[in-house]
Length: 239
Image (cartoon, rainbow, N blue to C red; front, side, top):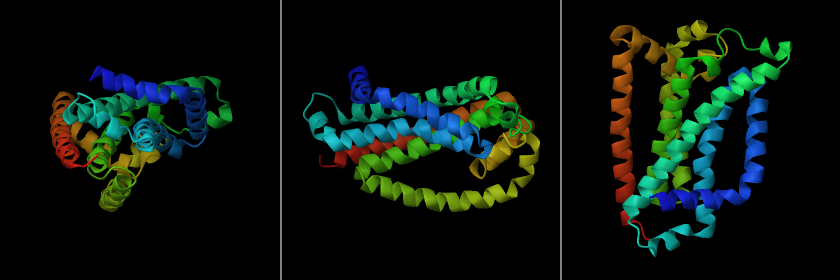
């Protein structure tokens, strides 16, 4: 698997000179608008996976991988490891940029962040990881089933349908927005608002440790289902 992960890095390496400054400028610009910082940072984190599959699609890497002595199961697992590692790094940068930009920001910019900033809130960072995780494990089965661009199109449709239902839940969670200020639940609505309310309610009812264990268990189940579907789809697909 390490060779496949190294392959991902080598594919992106020629573009690092552009990726790094664009990522910094992207997140710095988003910092000026608290309501957008969460989502733009999340999109930057998920951008790694999108960039990887687009580059592989352009160079037709699937045919090359199919000719190598590596199982399709290993290919799928390596893609999940790479995508989730990028998400974790994105969460770290989401927090790091927040503190770094606050240190150099003007008073006028800082005043836009009312209450506890999202990047300084444990719940908001958890919501960042949860939403990013769901997007990642939701997208990859579509990618391994249909490839690009059809997989991305079907995933967009499925996401739009799921979003409609989540919007209804978010309207029920409006009360959570006043708890963390503009940089907390309000900055990550509508999905973050629902996640914020659910996490707060669960932590209050069950306690912090049981809630964390429940999240880890649920994430593991979702990952197993997603990986299982991806492996099945990829093995059945003609390369």
